[in-house]
Amino acid sequence: MDGIARQVVATGTDAAEVANRIVDGLAGPGLRLALVFADWRLDAATIAATHRALRAPVIGGSTIGVIGKGVPRDAVAAVAIGLYGDWLRVGIGVAQDLPKAALTRSRDAVVRAAASLGTTAEALDPARHVGITISDGTSGHEEAFCIGSAAAAPQIRFVGGCAATELGSTRRALIWVNGEVMHDAGSVVVLESERSFYAMQSSHLVPTDVKTVVTAAAGRIVDELDGRPAGTRLRELVASIGDTLAEPMPAHSFARYVDGLPYVRSMTHVEGERLHLACAVEVGHVLRLMRPGDLIGTTTRDLGVAAEKVGGEVAACLAFSCIGRHWDAAARGLERALAGAYAACPTVGFQSFGEQSGMLLVNHTLTGLMIGRRRGAS
Image 1: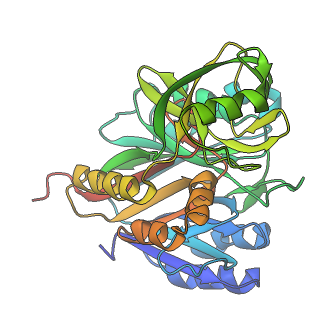
Image 2: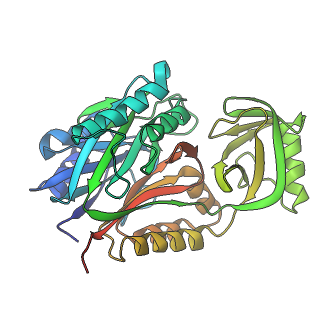
Image 3: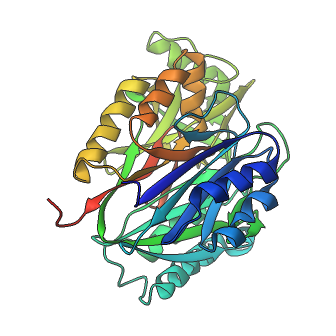
């Protein structure tokens, strides 16, 4: 599979040296797309400038942790994957200035991506096309971006992740598209593939029988559950299943169920009676309490299922892995095991502030794209 995809891991605090190693590793004939993800401490403009040297589309974003085989723990690093060959065509659209009109601009980004492939959003074929998104995870409009982009072509699958930056700061997460660095923006990449692909989703959280109703909330902050102060009520709910709430960063979480499927809303932290979530909820939403499950077993199983879906030969695996998953791994001493689960496939990706699965923004979830053998190959 070396002629189809190449991966690069580059460590160090000198962004120019990291960028040069990415270019050296990916440059070559037939490069159709490069996806590059970098630690927020590396200068984004320098990383994005790899576009000029590679002479191919370069899409990516900042993160607090990259995913790739051989990435040292706690290293400042960037990872990149290049896709090569005539099996792939790439269409790109950008939704800028999301606070002004997130739904419209994300929809238009899909329209432009389809147009660059010589087709329309309505004509995209789920057997040949898939959407990948990377958006600013600090814009506050991530939910609308997911809705607008996926609704533009609901017949195909969309997966993606939200770029991230250091926690607890006012620093903005950044994305880059063909040399331009942006925030308050989202990128849409529509792949037209002659190879099999599978858009995957994996979450290790386990539903409990406990449900609660949001009775006071604003955006991503919940003040009341079931008419009670949210912090007090959450502690009661967790105690009712025989668990203890970890504070200020809980291992438990919530999920909204849509058509029988759980869409997780992570709690980033508890502040007294206030619950801070990674996704917005509204008054009246019914939430299911979720408890931690088998992170490594579930991840290994779901990556294996995805590999089978693409014929058992994996050319590349693109992963958007929620920061909450990595918090769980660190708290339970499973960081090395999680890295090993990802390394079992040729996986490249980043720790995300939220993940796109269709029209929904989710948390505590791995979303991604597995690319396999050419269709019709035996």
